[in-house]
Amino acid sequence: MSGKVYLVGAGPGDPGLLTLKGARVLASCDALVYDWLANPELLDLAPESAVRVYVGKKGGDHTMSQERINELLCDLAADGKTVVRLKGGDPFVFGRGGEEASALAAKGLAFEVVPGVTSAIAAPAYAGIPVTDRRATTEVAFVTGHEDPGKPESTIKWGALAQIGTVVFLMGVKNLPNICAKLIEAGRDPATPAACVRWGSTPQQETVTGTLADLPQRAAQAGLKPPAITIVGQVAALRQELAWFEKLPLFGKRILVTRARSQASRLSEGLAALGAKIIEVPTISFLPPEDPEPLETAVAMLEDFHWVIFTSPNGVDAFFTALGEAGKDARALAGCKLAAIGPATAATLLQRGLIAEVTARTFQAEGLIEALEAKGITGQRVLIPRAAQAREVLPETIASWGNLVQVVPAYRTVRPPESTMLLANALSQGLDAITFTASSTVTNLMEMLDQNGRDLLAQQSREGGLTVAAIGPITADTAKGYGLEVKVQPEKFTIEALTEALSAYYAS
Ligand code: SAH
Image (cartoon, rainbow, N blue to C red):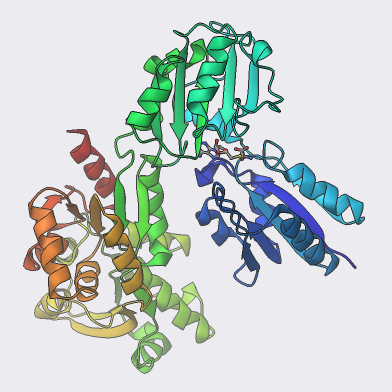
């Protein structure tokens, strides 16, 4: 049985602009064939087992010829594979998707087209330029800028284009001077507003504005390179009022997120929504404790405990994994009172149908101690399942009130080996900010660097280039211990507050 090829539009760059259908077929493909303009983040949506083939096409650099790509798609489909052919923007807008579909059709192989958000519309939109607007134009044309208008065999109807309200050129950076000259020659007013938008909808977006007469010179001055969209028409002037993306508070900032991959998404998504370019270098991953026995034993005798205290969402997860392995469920905690170090931990308990009797408001051990003290706990048996390496202040203080405290390692944190390489890459490309969400993220990050690297980072944090953001005072102290200057520290120790504090820092 032969397979099927989905020609999927990846959208212009912002991964959020992939369609729901595109995401669905990506999630269940056997093979993924993609090119330069498709955002690499989207590749993660395909199953890990899917074969990934990069076919290139950066400017003139064709890693694989179109004929070879067509053959590859046919071979994969004939082999019974479900193939996603992921193409930048929309597959049928200057994407040669039609040729790929024809190659499949000629062999009787099945295909579907999943249209995408084309850069021809989205890049202008992210620059604050509607391609049509009743105030400015009633028509729009999409034109390839790839054809050198100087060539005698050019098939572009310049006379007609000069009459059209909005003209959008793709692939036009190299030929920009010729394109503008040709339109003026064909009768278009040289004072017509015009703009180029490079890497539209991504944190690297760059916009150059001018008139038909001076845009080529301005683009050259700005050193504008492909890929860019060129818009000619009165609509380009609306950008003055409508530019929105480039005004987001974290627009274009390169921000390092050091959280564990399993926990990073909320922080990363929040920062990206404010325009930041996120680089994830997980400094921590969670593993079961080296010796699982203490946790197993504690789980087996839960009825002996009056209190169970959770100090992280991950501690809750690890505890419930052990509970499940013992063939038990949340009812095993029926006789216990529960405490949570902060709202995130309380929320993780609530997901399992459990309400914490005590939740600290300051999100750290001291806050929890205060909240528990208010309850006047004494003469109780207290279980604390938590990280193998953690601060002693919580168990020691609770024990000092005359309680029997048992600390069991529920998980341990390790430094993911692949992160050292990721960090080196991130640093070589330059960073605007680093976020730390726990002391261990600081320690592990700094331990990935040699002394030179640590000194350099500390120096950059002091001399302005690099903004260090820490979630709370303990994390900040650890950072300061490494010589880092902490410029951003929210009042509340939450991910949302950290995101807001960074945004406020850059806004001021
Ligand atoms: N099928 C694609 C176009 C492919 S042709 C689409 O529908 O968007 C390649 C051209 O697309 C580039 O030369 C550039 O003009 C444009 N392009 C693609 N992504 C872009 C982006 N994020 N910003 C600006 N232009 C982009």
